[in-house]
Structures are given as C-alpha cells and as structure tokens.
Image: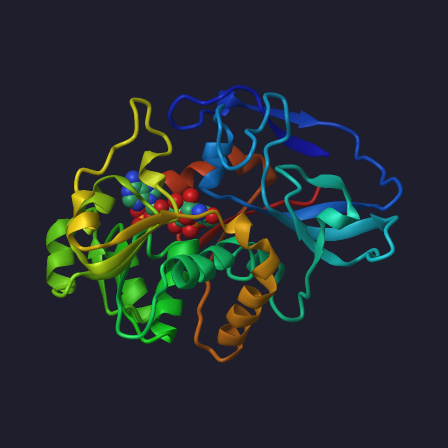
Length: 332
Ligand code: NDP
C-alpha cells in the first residue's frame, strides 16, 4: 500500500518536503469492513485547508496521518453484507492505493450510469456543492443574473450550467482566453471575464448592467471585492471558497466593499457541502437527469501516476487544471 502522509504543515504552497511517501503492507478487512483498491483520487482545493492547524469545519489532518482525500475504487475483499468483491465504491479513503474501511463509510456507485471519476466530480462532492450552493444558499431563480468565479472548474462549470437550466443569465470569471471561450461556447454561459487579462470590475459593469443577483464565489480576494461593488438590490453572495487566499502567508485579503450589503439589502453567506449529506440523493438525481438529457456537460482532468500527487495538487493553485482534477492510481 503506497501512501502520502502529511510530514509537516506547509507555509504557503505545499512543498515536496511537506509529504512523506510511505509503503506498507496492505491491510486485511475485519468484521463489517472492506478492502478497497483505490483507482482515482480527488484533488480538491479544500485539501490545502485540511493541512493547516486550527479550528475549521473539519479536524486538521494530523502530522504523520495519511492525507485525507475523496477516492473511488473497487472492493477487493468484503466482510460486509452490503458489499461484494468487484463493487465500485467511493468514500474519503485518503491519498493511498489501498484502504481498509468500515462498510458504513463506503458508498456503492453504478459505473453503468457514469464512469468512476464522474463520482468524484459531477455526481460527487463538487456536484453537490454546485447544486445546493447555487439553489439553496444562493436562491437562484429565473431571470437572475448569476456570476461565478473559477467558472471552468469542477464546481464553477456546474454552477453556471445549473443556473442556465433555471433560466438565469450567467457570467463566468476564468483565467485565460481558452477557458473563457470554453465556458461560453461549450457550456452555454452568456459571457466570460478573463481575470488574467482584463479588469474584473469593468467586466462586471459591462456584462451585468443591472447588477449581480447571485455571486457564487470560489476565489475570494479582489474578485469578491469587485462583485460586492456590483451587487444588485437584494443580491446574494455565496461564499463557497476563496482559493486565491488558501496559500496566503501574510493574512487573507479582507473585502473592502462590504457596505454594499447594507446599501443593497444584500446577503453574504458561507456554506459547507457536508451539511447537505442527507439531501445528496436529491442533488445526484437532478444532476444525473440533466446529464441524461444532454443538458449538463462535465469534464474531468485526469492525471496518471500515484507518485505525481504532490505536483498534481499544485495545478489547482496555478489554474493549470482544466475540469475536475483527479489523480489516477497506476497499477502496482
Ligand atoms: P477548480 O476545479 O475550480 O480548480 C481551481 C481553480 O481555481 C483553478 O483552475 C483556477 O482557475 C482557479 N484559481 C486558482 N487560483 C486562483 C487565483 N489566485 N485567482 C483566481 N482564480 C484562481 O476547483 P473546485 O471546483 O474543486 O473548487 C472551487 C472552489 O470551491 C474552491 O474554492 C473550493 O475550496 C470550493 N469548494 C467549497 C466547498 C464547500 O463545501 N464550501 C466544496 C467544494 C469546493 P483559472 O484557470 O480560471 O484561474
């Protein structure tokens, strides 16, 4: 069993020395446990936060512990009545090639409906984040102008497409011309702002003349500040993430334009997708329905090679991923 364990807490961007690469014997399942051969590992911006000490919505990964991660794979041995050898499963089994887990911590998935990596993206955690964040927290409805940052990414691409399903006008923020044309031409957004090459503030003014009704924020920092300055009356700002700030070493950028919330009788609210766990079936059914109707596109960016984990994770913070970033475990 190959593993990446947290060696030390990073300062800024994680370095190779923040990880220990460990090989140990594959464990054997006890009563009500299963042995999973992990095939795909979900690489998520949240992992950076889990590496930090301090209070958060979930306990930090301890030094010496296998790094926490969402995973998908196949049951190799089962001592649990609900699982048989060969079943496809997902769960938070960590950055390792094999895991012995309690059956109750695994979820069986149907690879006839969608390929395994999709259960780490559109039919998994990012999909649920987009669905509940936009509709429940953001309250997006027909004719709203919805803006989403990190628009071509795992969450953002789905947010924009769900908003289109609901009859909203959708503007995305993305880094570079290729990603901007992707969200407009492939995903059907109404417009995109290239934050790397144009003024986000001016782009918002241009594309949202009536203001932003729902800002679904994945990025934080100055982009959030510009959106606050461009809110519509009764606007909703959904704080999904702040990836531009996750590696900050001298404090996070604090938005200056928050008085716009008062002026516009607007609301800013954060959320954690795990709080919707008892409604995932509803979200997954809606997403699967849209996929089947050809109304929801999803893209996975799959990088091969378990050993490439440290470098691959960094792609999220440079924007060199294009779609839901997944690490494919190579055979032993
Ligand atoms: P993505 O697939 O969107 O990948 C991250 C993207 O962020 C990059 O591709 C890049 O896009 C963009 N980015 C990185 N650094 C910056 C920066 N400095 N400024 C602007 N954009 C940047 O990741 P996910 O869809 O998985 O996650 C998106 C967000 O959602 C994250 O903030 C994450 O923490 C959050 N999240 C929150 C959850 C919750 O429960 N609240 C659950 C899941 C995710 P580009 O090329 O356009 O620069």
